[in-house]
Image (cartoon, rainbow, N blue to C red; front, side):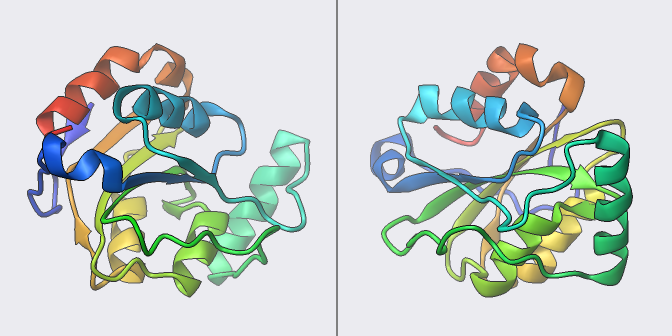
Length: 175
């Protein structure tokens, strides 16, 4: 479902900004990456993936226990590669799963070092069952000098069937 709860209304002109857009994401299970691929199909923007230097446990239960502790402790997780240079992009499509009432720790870690000042940010978020409000609040907290536009949210189980919903969202925000 698409919503704009507590997010500034922001839309972009397709003619002037598609070439200045990039997609930045963290995806552990592949659901958020699927949405990023759908966005790329529509706007032809490059994708930058964030990966933690030390991968999460492959066992889902163990991974979620560790991720929950990290979120609760406000942990910073070292990333596997240098941060991408986003200075040439005005618009960032920011993709992350929703973890334990917040943004995923790898994405939070990226934004702690690179708050995307002056950028237009359009979040796209997946979750097992929760609404995205905590993740959106975390983005606003970590990116206080960015313009946060209308977000896209879908449960992880529905991500692979969200192509048309992504198309509709992109049209709504002017892409």
